[in-house]
Amino acid sequence: MSTKSEPLTAKTMPIGSAIPEAGNAAQYRTGSWRTYRPVWDPAKCSHCLTCWILCPDSSIRAEQGKMKGIDYDHCKGCGICAHECPDKRKPLSMVLESEAGPKE
Image 1: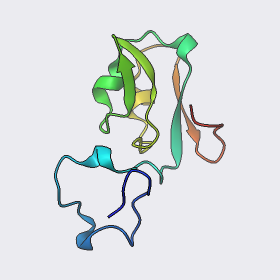
Image 2: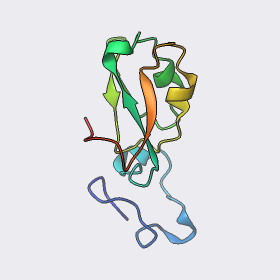
Image 3: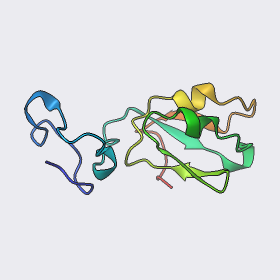
């Protein structure tokens, strides 16, 4: 099976594409196949942490009540963070992975 340094692929997944050990997603880089990447602009962020609460992959990094960034190793690019952000300044935007700049 893949480790954090190796992405999961069809060849490294167990038969049936099931990860047999529950609760181990943090051990694997599961965000390497996304099409869109959330890009965060800290200057526009109100730090309400709605994105942190709703992210199904726990990919929003927060410390002491403020957003600190995005864990791209685990983000799958679903866009829930950007879609549900209540801030009208839109601090999170979804950008094509192929057009996004370097990861933070």
